[in-house]
Length: 559
Image 1 (cartoon, helix red, strand yellow):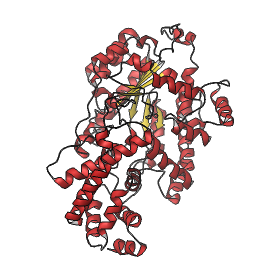
Image 2 (spheres, one colour):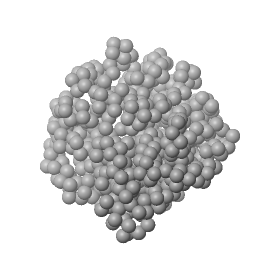
Image 3 (cartoon, one colour):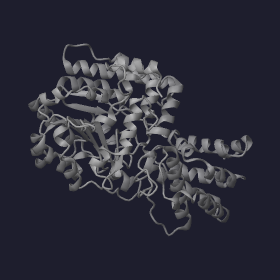
Image 4 (tube, one colour):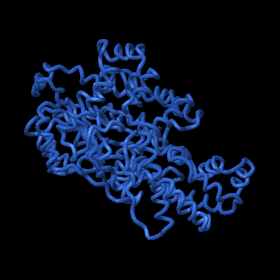
């Protein structure tokens, strides 16, 4: 529960009267995510409002879960999945809280709807229809960006992570169910994957062009997909184009955006620039500052100012060895000092004003990470609340609903491989289900002890080096599918697995180390994997954490 003091301060910041809901998202917004899961926003994965197609869009908007969330937020209670905003508000980071974003839309009156050519809301004793819709319904994507993972890229999921393609329940019937809502919607966001590869989006855009062409659509694209059909469609809708682009240099860009061709992307970017100018709409680039490209940012700002492009920044948390805020303090200070020397000059031009402000805010956010506690809290937040590992465990809250574990296991003829797959997946599913207070099939959740017993027997019967290599391979593969750690270590995540298995094979208590690792919680394992910056570091940390004694730890590290 937020304190009255925080609520009062937050209301002043967002210019709302006393008694206003801590966050209006549940009253104005629906977020459609992968596997049919619907929530109030992209950060709240805990309070599942419903699942398509088991629940219709209308049932979801008027159902009990969303009513519970609305009531909690009206009482400044952020315990139903809104812990990320709660942490930010308690830290007085009011500008970073996503609740501030939704407050802007809550202040939009019926008069403003009409001014924008939209239908006035229904005058009935039911909850008004949503003003916003957010779509992140599938991972269809043609790129393998180095800071991305399989939940956001089908190419990464099938090639790098070697997992089965992700199913997509959204079809034309889904578009039909949304159509009655469309005349009332002010804005809709379309993310991916790559939106121009998602068929349901194109069906929606065609429908929106007919029933509400003034609806503001925000499309986040990698700018690699642009044909005549897409161009014709873009002419008919009121679209804001956001392009994900991380360098103005071919070599740097293509090393980050694996699979993209720099020249083609820049040509498409210039087409979007012309399109937005003709429509009188802002055009935005979204840049991921990383260790590979941070020195290029001032030059990118200069280019964007010259072209009239707004430049925004996405924080990169994973892989941690790419992230700026995980740099050692002296190195992070060097980045900050460099940026301070290149703050864009103040001008009266609107785009340049915004780009200068965004640049200064980037510096301020990095300065916050100079405090070690902030780094730790950021890691805990990702692991406990907002990491994609807690996404989509269930098809509903009640015990009788159909449920889907986050990790779908592929079959293997190798007994050890199969056992490792099932053990790791079960531990992840059960641990996160408990965390989110959702349900899993009994056949999964009740087998943790049984599967641990199977693993211990296999460990006793198998050469430790072989066991270690197989187990850690499957552990990394599984976590790659849900958390994006497959490319953290030295460019090849499997190198350190081989090194560790060799080290353990020569250690007198290697079996006990592995036994302790088997008993570790998924959160502990994920933190260890994701926060290590090299194969040597992760090996040392595993040993330090799971070896029986300090002497034995030193022995193993030296090995």
